[in-house]
Image 1: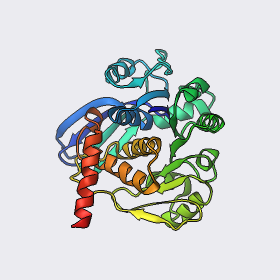
Image 2: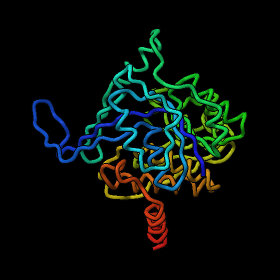
Image 3: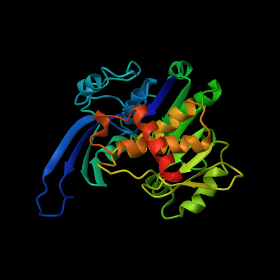
Amino acid sequence: MKIYLYGMICGSNSFKLNAFLKPDEYSEIEQCARFIGGETGTCATVLSSLGADIRIDGTHIGRSTAQLARDFYKNKTVDLSSLTFDDSFEGLEDYVLISGSDRTPFGRFGHFFGEYYNGGVKQWNPPKERDIEWCDFAAIDAFFGEDSQAAAEMCVRLGKPYVTIDCKYDSYIHRHAAVDVISGDGLKMHYGDVSREEMFTRYAENTDGLTIITNGGNALFYGRKGEPVRTFQPFRVDVASTLGAGDTFKAGCAYALAKGMSDNDLVRFASACAGVAISRYPMQLDPPRLQEIESLLRFHIRETNS
């Protein structure tokens, strides 16, 4: 199973607190961790844990994260050869505060993108056709504009099905995706407060692929053009941290797509991936394993039938 991932890769610094921050009040750091994150970075970690061979590309790796990336992926089935290690800039990192199911990320992503779109240097790679020729399936973040679309166009031309996330319903990358996963944050970013019900119809009718609109721990919507919308209630687990849940769901979709699962089974499998992920902290240092996911799926079947 060879999967190509294109998109956001960054250093991530997370802090698990005993209580979420309030102005002028103290909070204790219970645990903290540093690892490679980002939508593509986390997806690579999870898919490698599931036994896939991964090749990643996207964000340039700067001075602050170069050794972290090499060390983090050293014993994983993740090929870094397409990445650009660039000592000319500091590197992209984020910071995440976590308490229970609440989290707040912050960083310099606006600066990262804004500098390029205001005439600065592009600090991410365009996709390489040789990488897409290598893979059987792909997952593409939609955040790099024309470069993300170029990756999708190469996949279409070379007959490689791909998963994507949080793109607009009238975009090329959505129209040609095998699976598109849209989060509540993604909907709000593109369409403000338009309802999930209304947006699901627009998304589903504009692709032959599977559309999934997630909603945190609440029921998600999924389905295809011309079919009734289906719902699925995510698995109930004890939540240690929701950091990486969406990226793990995306990884589960890519794995299930590669395994040829039905739509129903794909959604269940991806939900179980995310369920295992949020039951631990930091998940990125102990990613879900296939036997854990299958165990959660079996437990759910027994619980449903009891």
